[in-house]
Image (cartoon, helix red, strand yellow):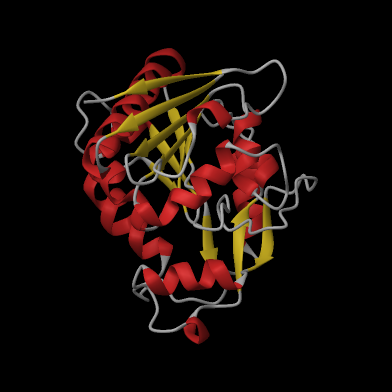
Length: 260
């Protein structure tokens, strides 16, 4: 089942997405004694991560965090480094029990894969890019690979988004490649939550929701997940026609909540 939550703005969106995430973490810790989460990055995740670190009742020492993607060859001190992003915006603020970063070097893939294989991931916070990419899986996305992490070549739209968000001064400065968790591995999360605010994402949300499964629109694959929550705000939902939303597979429907 796909559930869409329409919020008035990015702040409310972040709070609502964080509340659902926190509930999953608390339940997992109570049931399994631990919780595992995958985090994405970028400007669209600011409000969600800020709200998540302030959620009550989470024993962060029992939470294990996995990193979604990182540029190849980028220093962890670079302003655009996603390791730096997560350390400052999440890890240092929660004192989370265990952290698994993608360091942008080939040697990290085997270690990350072994750690992922140890237990299920309870929830993945998975953004959708302006070109509808999922992690750094740009179109045409590889839906078939079973590798947990893969090398990807960033397309021009993806690189332009990084410049627009202020991470790099020009497209020429954006690394050409990244290491990304594969779509197949993302779909193995027990629950996927996508927080996607802002007008810059309106066409990506429209294409994701109003299109059939397509490797030209990577976000469409999220609709095939049995437990997918999509949080949008008025701006990111502005180009979507409700009656034209296409569920991810024949037996799957969707429901929608509108927040005041």
